[in-house]
Image (cartoon, rainbow, N blue to C red; front, top):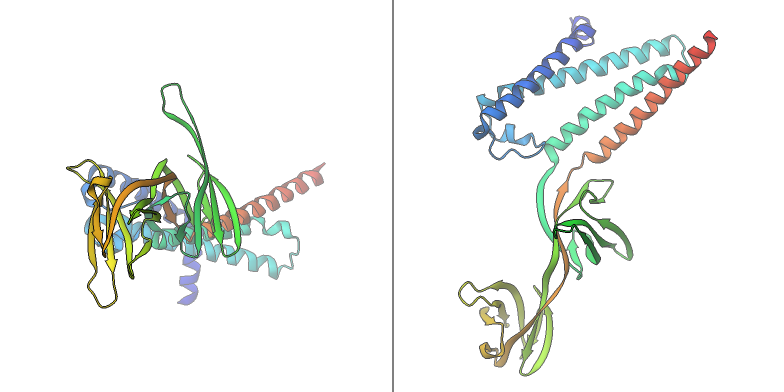
Length: 324
């Protein structure tokens, strides 16, 4: 019984049938998504978790496709294994004989990479990187330079942002631009340029007449209390920037104070006169962050496929050479 199952799973006929079936299901799926887009609201990129988080009969084609690809992968693996074992039993030691098997192995790893990407890739996140260090996990990112060129009509032609990446005491740099993402971890993390310009990095406050520059989310000390610059926004009625301060003093409830830009709108914060004098801006880029753990696996599959193709070519050249 097990022998029959094994022979069926490694059958070339099964591979051909399943291959055509998966191609047909891909066509059906494309048409289904095109004519019934409402059933696929929330589906992004290659995220296949959508189909398992929201099971539906409308996705029947995908479940059959998933099953077909699983059978196709098993069939390819068993065929490859059977071919390698046959050569080993025959005592074949010429490495070029295994070029085709290496290509098949690369194909299997590619299927695995697609599965990993579909299950574990994260949705795109938005992030702003300015001239001040922006924490990101165990890294710090900052824009060290920004160069742009424009078309005669004023549209951006090329953007080159120099991004410094610091991890511990080691600092590296990469160029970020349109169609030139910054990648980390062999492509696991990818930063795509979405926009560029200037962004507020902090504010200049006068506390009892003394100017102090404070970054957004940082704090300053006023009469024994820690006062955090919690946020910066545009007031819809005044059409002027407003800074939100949160005062924290031990044993007391936190207090919020809103101060509008300009000396006439000073406020008393923890017994001190505070007014909002200016905004500190810096060059910045808005990026979309994509995280996909399958990228290094896919790169490994490409390299392995190249090795297999090279061995096949060497084998063909040797055979041609022997004929002459």
